[in-house]
Image 1: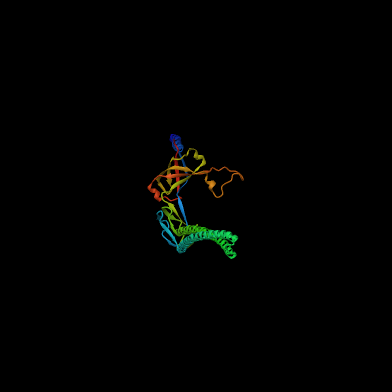
Image 2 (image 1 turned 60 degrees about the horizontal axis):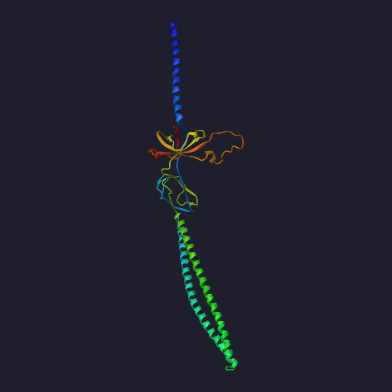
Amino acid sequence: MENNTQPKSKSKKVIPIILGMIILIGGFFGIKEYIYYSKHIDTDDAQIDADISPVVSRIGGYVDSIYFEENQHVSNGQLLVKLDDRDFKIRLEQAQAGKQSALANVNVSESVVNSTSANIGTAKANVDAAEARANKAAKDFARYQNLIKDGSITQQSFDQAKAEKEASQALLVAAKNQYQAALKQVGTSQSQVAAANTNIASRGADIDFAKLQLSYAHINAPSGGIVSNKNIQIGQLIQPGQSLFAIVNDNSLYVKANFKETQLEKLKEGQLVDIEVDAFPDVKLEGHIYNFAPATGAKFSLLPPDNATGNYVKVIQRIPVKIKLENNKILEKLRPGMSVKVSVHVAE
């Protein structure tokens, strides 16, 4: 009987010990987690992101040459694609020929101005001569009027003097009209010169536009980075605005973490962040909160939810938070879209 009671008494002592150890271990980890989460805010709804520059064509044409390979690193300003530019060169030549023609028109107009300006001098001299003749004829007529009264001259002489006076007056009027016409012709010629100069400016703008269009036939890298999403081939006809490829910019990696709206109370810019990349679990990255999105992710969706319609179900929303990464060798291996877990140090 004694042998049977001893195991039972031992088992009764072991069970409380085990339960006590479990409680102690659970309490230890519970306190540890409490302390941790009182100083940190975590989320695994986060990923690596980067500035991605889409490269589009500004003009249409056939692809003549491609100077890069998929996933190749390129430098800022490096020539990547060349389009067939023969049409644009011809348009440039046409614009340059148009400017030469406009310059020639200016020279012709200036020659006309010089010629008409010379005619002004002649017309003015004719006016002066006509005035002198008219004055002489008027004086002769006045003298003959006195002589005819005395009978000193014949009626024929008097009539000749009268006719000469009237003719000289008519010639004076005609000379003055010619002088005014010459002045107007000079003004018209000068207006033609101004119009021709304006045409030169317009043709110069045509040349600039043709050069700009020609430059668009050479597509350069807008920034340094890795080329991806290539969707063109040699000989392919592309249209203006067509997307050709994309460049993931150098030194533009960051983390976009989507925190619950209930977690934002203690978050602020500049706080230290521990980052764990799923692809490299043994590598610890650090960063800091850079800024907060102005709206929830749902507001930027194609069909944002409208709580004013239908049955309302409250759903905790998430706010995108941008986290800048500190320098680390592992950054060269990171790619946009990789999943990460972030932990923000919120203790004061």
